Length: 270
Figure 1 (cartoon, rainbow, N blue to C red):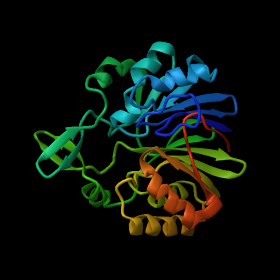
Figure 2: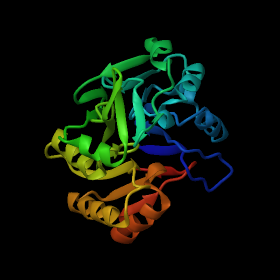
Figure 3: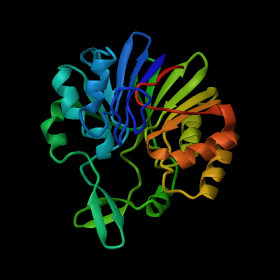
Figure 4: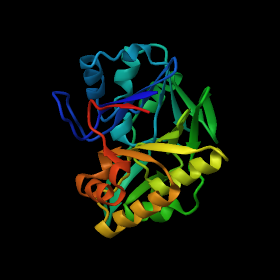
C-alpha cells in the first residue's frame, strides 16, 4: 500500500501546506481519502501531483475538528460518488476552552446536514473494505486527557470534557503487519496502538501514521510517551501536523529510525 500526504503543516516542495491533514491511500485496488484538511488546499495539491480524487472509493473522517473536515465540500464537488465514513459520535459541537474563553473548532456548521446523503455513520469496529477497519476508542478516562489539552464538546448549553467518541483510527492489514492511521491521536498514540492490538488479537503491529497532538506538551511528557510507544513494539511511526517540531525532535532522539516526520507531498510505501 502507498500513502501520500496531500496536506500537512510542513512542506519541502512547491506544494502548499496548512494547519491540517489529508492523506490519500492506495490499498490494493482501492483508493481512500483520510480527512480533507482545513480547506480545499488538499485538492489543489492532489491535482498538482496528478492524484485523481474523483476516483476515490470512499473517504474517512478521523475526528470532528475543522482542520480535518472543512475540505469535505470541495471533495464532494469533485467526487460525485464516494461516501465519507464518520464515527456516530461526530457532531458539530467541538470547542477549545481555557478559563472563560471558548472557541468553536468543530466541523463547518451545516456540513452534516448539507452533505447528509454522502455521510455514513459507523459504530464499533467497522470493516469498510476487505482488510480495512475503522476502530473507535476503547480506553476509559480519556476525558482527563481532554481537560489537560482544553478540548470540550457542547451538550445543551454546557461544555464537558471531550471523550473523543467522534475519533476513530483507520487500520489496514498488510503483509508487514497492521498499519494505523490516527490523524491527531487525541486519546494518546500509545493508547491507540493498544486499542488496535486488542481489536486484532494475534496480529502483528507494523506502523502508525498521524499527528500526536504534542505541540503544547512538555519535554518530559513527550519523552514519557516515546517510552510508552517503544514498549508497544511498533516498528515505525510517521508523524507531523499537531505533533510539533520540538516534540518530533524529542521523539526522533528517543526512538531513532523508528520515527519519521511527514510533510505535504510525502509519499510513503507501507
